[in-house]
Image (cartoon, rainbow, N blue to C red; front, side):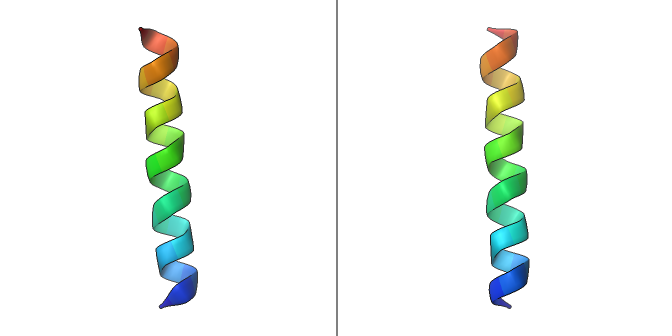
Length: 23
């Protein structure tokens, strides 16, 4: 569960980074 949560957080942070770069 902890590993899945960590993977989810990394995916969200990556998506936020991509959105921020597009601005």
